[in-house]
Structures are given as C-alpha cells and as structure tokens.
Image (cartoon, rainbow, N blue to C red; front, top):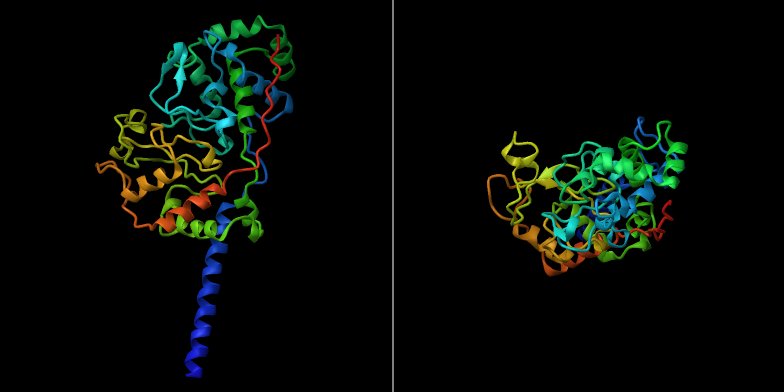
Length: 331
C-alpha cells in the first residue's frame, strides 16, 4: 500500500511538472517585442510621427472636412469604430467594420482583405476612396499647401515638402507608434504569477490547446496575419476579391490581433457580434459550412466554466494604455 501511495505521489509530481513545462514553453511564444520595426525607406523620427498624428486626427483630409482617420480608428474604442459598420462620406454606411490600428507596425498586409501591402499604401486608401473620405490626392496636396503650418512642418521633415507620398509616410509613421500597452498577461509572461487569476491561466491553456484559438491567433499580437473563412454569415467574399487563385480565399478575412480585444466590440468584419462570449460561441458551433471554410473551424465542446475561463484570459490582454492626447492642428 505504501509503495502504491509513493508511486501515485511521484505520478502527480511528474504530471504537474510536465504541465508547468508546457505552460512555460507556451509563454515564450507570446513575449512582447522590445522595439518597433520601421522600414528603411521610411525611418522613424519624432517630428515625422508628430506630423503624422496631426494628419491622422485632421478632418481636412476628407472632401467635406467632416471625417478624419480617427473617425473610424478611435483610440477610445481600441483604435477602431464603435459602430457595426464604418461610416463614410455623406454619412453613408460602409460594408465592413473598421479594423483596429493597434500594433500595425507588425502587420504583413492591411485592410480586412489585405489589399494594401504597406502601411503607407493603406494610409492613402481611405482618403481617396469615393465612399470613405472622398478626397482626390491632387486636392489633398493643394489643400495642405494652403495651410502655412503644414508647409513649415513638412519642410522640416521632408526635403520635397508636401506630397501625397509624404502624407502617407507621416501617417504610417504615427500608426506604427500606436502600440498596445503592457497588460496583466504580459506581466504574467514575465513571471508575475499574481497578475492574472487562476481562471485566466486555465483559459490560456484552453486557448492554446482544447479551444484551438492559437491555430490562427499566434504570437505576441495574437494573429498569424493570414486570411481564413471562419464561417461568418456574409455575402462579402473578402480576400477572394483581391486574390481569386484559391477557393479558400472566398469569404476569407485577415485574422485580427487580440490585444485590447475587450475594448473593441463589436466584432468580426461585419460588426454583427457584440460580446466576447458570443464570439466564443460562434467558434464552438464551427461556423457556416461551405467549401471555403477553414479546416480549423470545427465544433468545439467547451463547458460554461471553460467559456468563462477563456473569456477571463482574453480580458487579461487589455493593456495599460496611456490616454491619447489630441494634437493641436496647424493653421
């Protein structure tokens, strides 16, 4: 009897040690980067980032001077919109929910369908889109050149002054500085065991194993930067409209990062899902069945307790972000 008890004790110790090692291994995949990557052809400078911030918040970059980049990428809502669909020029509802601008310095492609290859390209897209900000680039340049303050600022940052390319470079530089703050999860990753609850720790294990969330939500920003059809009820064909080379691109959209996710309701490219628990329920059901559906979209059996644990984990990704001050716009 004594031998059996000792063997059982050793087995418990071995299992606990193995589980601890597995969690430690998983933790290494989610460590925050120490620096922000900036491209060689658009290096960082404080003056350029400040100029980009002004442009990002300036409604004069829209045709009717009633919309700015921040209208759809609001820092108060996790750098996206509070409405299910974005609103464009003349108060028209657009077809998709605005994606977040958080942590875009680590992006590979941009927009839900990945049609922009760089942040610089992305920055000019909404400005000149007829249904978004509706301002032609020639008019953009002309308008900015009539503002003395912008002429002075651009001449300090760029040798060739005000051009649409330089507008894009400035906005993109600012956007790369929009990084989610250190979260309770990050503190736990660094060894502070008391920074998150035991329930959230169990949710982290579910996220990486039983829940299969990490199949797409990988790395410190929780995205593989790829495109997947997750079975959302939609007529929008997403990535397929940009790249029709694969049937798997039909109804596929870029995996969003999960940083500050609790602040970023509503969810999905449609903006039709209002709560994190409803998002989890969508994945539990496995999504709408169709040929393009991702192979990772399969029904999952999670108990109510496990759903709560997973939700608790996702809530630990909220960063301690500093309030974003509004810039004083040049005259």
